[in-house]
Length: 219
Image (tube, rainbow, N blue to C red; front, side, top):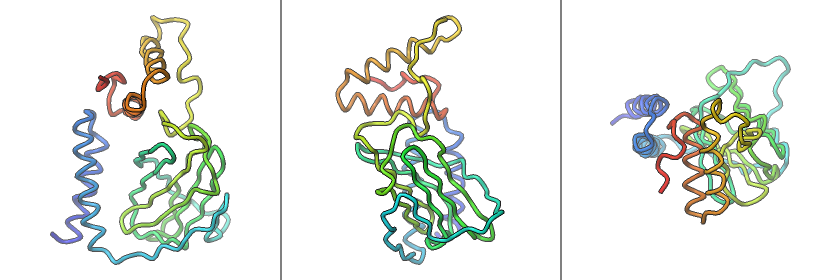
């Protein structure tokens, strides 16, 4: 299969992933996306990746004033106990034309001159604090990997900050989800690491619209 056909398959799979609702279907699509992405990367010319400077604000290329940007609102992410990885699927990005700004509660990455356009991936308020000087951006042939190091170990229930996300509602009839939210909070605080990971994934899927029931899939 040619690189162009693989690229078309990848675009179609990403569209399907955005439409999928059931966790099992989303998982199958994610696995296939990784497989096609790996095949596509193996056929592309390797892109040199210089070691980023360990700075809280690392600017590889100064951007002229008045530039307009296309917002990259669609991306995927995963996590382990120490860090968050954000995956942005964008090709023909030059590592030397990145402008990155990491702060304890935010991340802002700008991609300049990508096929004549400028793109931006920004998270104005993160769920929890990060360590700016350890964060980095790596450009690969078909995607960009943004690594955010957590200031404290543990699972995040969401990438974005959600104010009072576990606050009980004063009116249960107007807020039927409040009971489930309270139950999930208690299970998360008292559960072991496996339970915490399961609840974190279930809540993340519910927040992203992949499933309407945050309790679905819990043991």
